Length: 409
Image: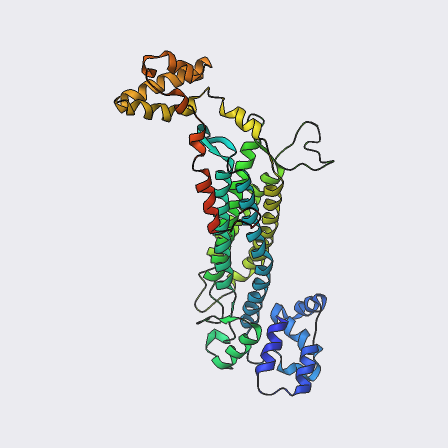
């Protein structure tokens, strides 16, 4: 707010060079403003009074021709721009971390699950590549959302420049390095901030999706991935064996806050006539909370990605839990290739896979003993290699968002 007031004084006609020096030296404390606000019952008026008093006689030029929203909204744009300088590099770091782990595990076989049920094998690298692309989309959304929200307005009461001019606004905003709101109606339109909050909520949802997967894979019955666990850390106050996925759970919980704040941002869009201040009290909570939370969650997620412990042996063991039932589609297609009716083939494979599950017997052995298996190349059918033969192609698409380092190329 102070930067906006100073920039405006530097562009109006009237202040002498000595007065401008005094204005640039003007300062304030939060306590002084709070004390003054007890009199004015108006936060910006209190700020202006304290800053002007600090400048001495030159203070008469402070806030000349401006209205509160000129200072608040343009100051907010400066704040958001500085927030972007912190948040956006971290969003890109998250992409890079996911890409690195995806490439590392491009051929690490693991079970793919749909509806929570074993489906067909995939690779852990392919899983992570999906999260990497999503993180990249979120990073790009955040870049666009921050860019469109960091605009200012120095247009005066109801946005008509009655006490200044469009040229004055352009010069002030140029000093601050901001674009202008084309039509401000006194305030910058709140759909801009709503878009930012929605982009933040989407980024949080992406973090939640990854954290949810990690939580599911960390379950005792699965035990394929664990969160990093530091020396001296305790998982439970009562049960020493516990290594709970608390960091992932925290991400999941706080992503809910981001979604709630995004809804509040949408509620702020519709104001009465040219403006009211129903949005002001809301965004003073949700904008700092959401931007701070996103920064925290991104840092948390990067730590999880870089430090997660991948249990490749357990992944291989879990592949065998269904006694080969996960090869059912390959058996089905092999039967169809032998001129078997598809529905008939489906029923045969369904019967044999259910036996494999119920009797805990190898599907391959059951198929070899069944007349349906006569003439089938069982070695070719029950080959995990078929599930990874395009892993390099799929994971290789990460080149679109993160070129392979020279040391890996």
